[in-house]
Length: 249
Image (tube, rainbow, N blue to C red; front, top):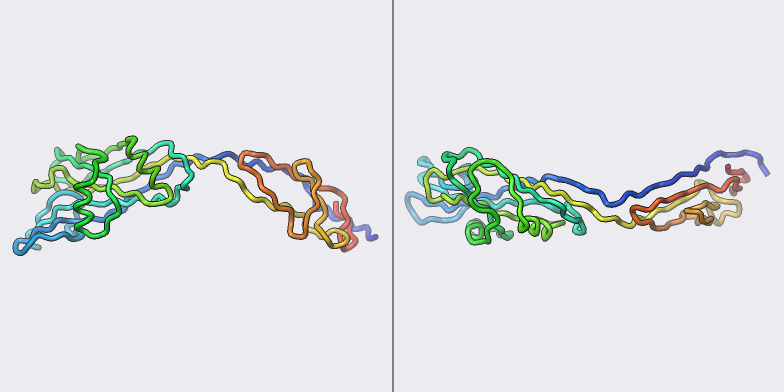
């Protein structure tokens, strides 16, 4: 037998940590819809074009007014369906308003697509928060947390409208951001342990001690599962002879 010795073995342990806690911000993307009243002709519904998110605005050059409402879409597809929601906060920021005494409300809307359906649904849906001042701040409620829980791995929709939208100076812009803290429970992971040689005889990759048990390693490696939170210990058997006549240490 050849006397070459290749030092290739090691012993180590891996700890698979328990479920992680995450906090993430989800900014709502806007779909602005408007009830449009032209100087001539019949009113109609359309996507907003006057640069406001809620309230009323008249543009003399266009010869028409818009009463705007906004559908906010929150993409929660990065939150796993099995995540546990631990806290939810909705931050709002109203700006470019003319009257700081005005208030707006938010509603629990569905995913409607046409301007008329969106506009009407925002006004008819159940209230989420009401009497919110044209300002900035944050809100939370059990209803909001339930909405987030129901929308994990999917999309959540919130409507916004001015409670003073019949007034000519009720226009405003509005941004909404959800801050969600959630934890992901422990998972099972698949692991393949292998030696980087073929043993004498050519039928396997030698042996290895896995969690205190001596295992023969198949040519495709030894695959097994561990639950997150468990400790894994791998150690080498040394020496072993490979199929090239070398002794592996």
